[in-house]
Image 1: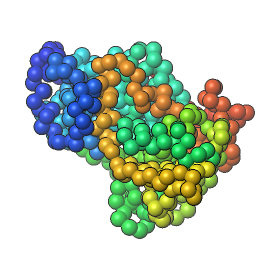
Image 2 (image 1 turned 30 degrees about the horizontal axis):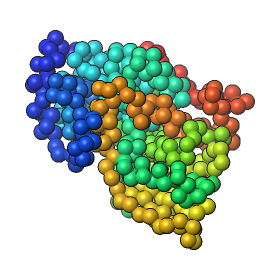
Image 3 (image 1 turned 30 degrees about the vertical axis):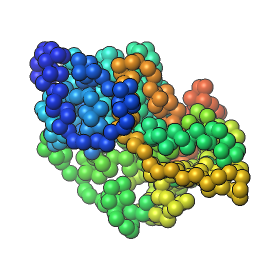
Image 4 (image 1 turned 45 degrees about the vertical axis):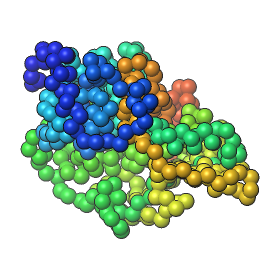
Length: 438
């Protein structure tokens, strides 16, 4: 049960103001950028953190560095909440059920950094509670959820920004400007990729074998039923929990939704498109023998107006593509532009265009500060919820193409497949009671 929240906003901000500066130094952008994105001392944005894993606590530090503070942290796992509380630099309230957090009158906005299957409901209910939302990518577990999130944001006039932070990198802006100006000619082919090998190498993070542990009791302090939420009831297994949830269809869509959404977001922006016309996919779990359900090898091909895009996700071979273990390659008639978070480079076709090379610029930090500024100005974010849905949909329908084993034709206006009711059924799922998509 939440503690009494009757103390005033001014008292809360006075108590929290200095603590937020103790959360750790984050590299800063030029002062002119900060001037446009930080609230005044009497207008400090008060946040609630929903989802307190590694990404959640990382985001907290960036938001606090940008001038926000946290009134409460929320997670079904007590140990996760405690870590987030420590990361805050002071003592925000710990609330296990996000619905209680949304009752907190002093909270202006929430940060949703949960597993993918929990992105939709906290976002929708936060909008209904009059709070703005920063939600991690992919926007949603399903297309139907994503559309409901957009409708909630619009109906309640809320700022909802997705965590596609590459949009805030200055080198991405310059690369997109170069592409839009025709700097590499007409682009006919785009490739995006992520390459790991879980059977060799560092074997850590996402590039690791997750093993095959047996089912067990949930750890102490974990409300497992709440963690499952709308997902199907399953016995607790450490592999399906926290970090590794991304490899199980009940909660996520593997690295196709977990990473490729970042790449597609940049492709849509650079190419001036919003949706593919068709998608086909192939792949499977060909090599890896751990408990994951999602493929260790997958290729998806998307037809867009005027160009084709291939999306590759590998977990069993780490040979770099274009010398990079992840990235985007725009292939044009005058040259090829390859971009990652570390920078971009143009490789000319003969002497038709000059070679260009630029290093990395910050992405996290600027992205969170934009949200803070937009909550004050009420300006639509560059990574708005609708844009986030358009970037998420290709990854969701690629997984549907893989599951159905056929090429699918997409009707963007109806957000459904053309003449394929079987595939349409996979655009939404029934929630486990008592949860429902509001």
